[in-house]
Image (cartoon, rainbow, N blue to C red; front, side):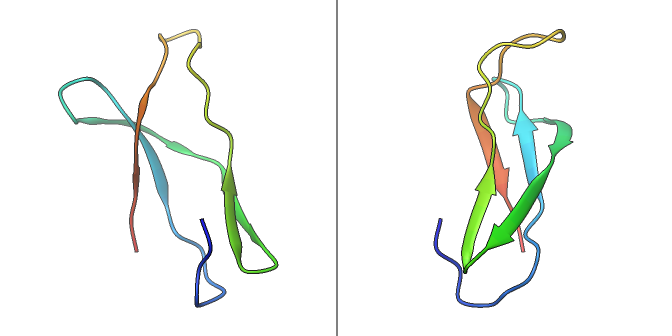
Length: 53
């Protein structure tokens, strides 16, 4: 995701009801927000994410 301001945007994994289940590590590189999307994990896969500012 291209971002205009070089600042951190918190990214959260969501459950299927839209509740936050944890913050995902993220970083901004050259104006692009980067984070790893993982559909498998020890607490179950995540297919929904929330990016906030």
